[in-house]
Image (cartoon, rainbow, N blue to C red):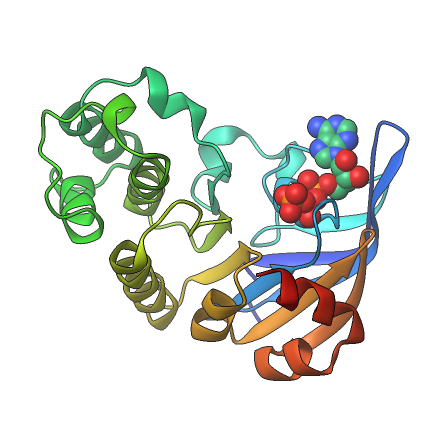
Length: 236
Ligand code: ATP
């Protein structure tokens, strides 16, 4: 039997309050594959990421990570399957220094000591051990959150707007690290409005509109051929 894919949604519908946030979404992400979720504000990108982490539950259909149902999987099992870098990593605002944060990340992930710190060094050169996350820019904090999540090397990595607040050099470093992860076989799903980032990283773009998948294909094809994409591109 073939192993279960890192991420799989089948006819997935999710309601949030009175809103139908996702409608019959089908999506399978294979190991080593990078998928960009695109679409306007409110299209359902973050909700789909939340479904893969068990933060929201289906109203119909199914969602699985490595064959497991995320909202019924205990956290200690779930962190071995999926890592999420949220749009606003608030927890880090209250954390201690970068060194403390990284030591905790190594411990939680059962990783060799220094694993997280090496990742931070790669992504955020110039940050010192004593730096406090609250003194970092939004983009740097997001990058630190990414390093913490990567320490656990989850087979499925979910990134919500990972380039928000990053300058050109920081974005290039992030692209390098994410490409390396994909080459190592990690499945990656990123929600983004950044067409350039999607073109650089994604093998496939899934375009959402009002909770529905309206296009799914190679990045260039979806970006060029989808009529509903045009207004969004012109906005960027
Ligand atoms: P953005 O690009 O702004 O992040 P998105 O594509 O990620 O948008 P979602 O955040 O998934 O879109 O929102 C999908 C729908 O669900 C929207 O109608 C939104 O208002 C609604 N929604 C999102 N979060 C919640 C929540 N916590 N409670 C209720 N409704 C929500």
